[in-house]
Image (spheres, rainbow, N blue to C red):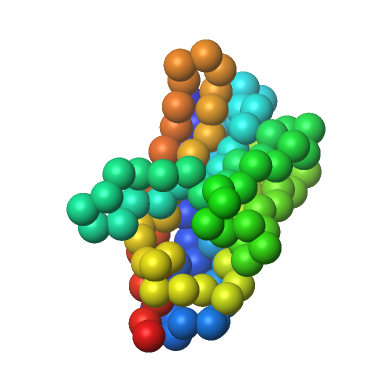
Length: 119
């Protein structure tokens, strides 16, 4: 099992920045890809960005050039992924979820952190 703990959400004005963090613990050596998804009210959960253990990165078109995902090397039995969000827009308002894949059909989710961007 893997546990994911997110932090860093909050309220920010449009044009501002936030950084989200997600710490994975437990059986972290089963994890390849970690990333962030988000879900706005009345909408489906959507991919924001992912990063593999080898460093391959994928972004949603809507965040390219504004968001940056990064991942620390494993330390103290923790695997940590970050999402730096710049030039935030009202449309970025959502609950952001950390995700980790532990193999075929094995998915882990964090509890979610609220990001609210005001105009």
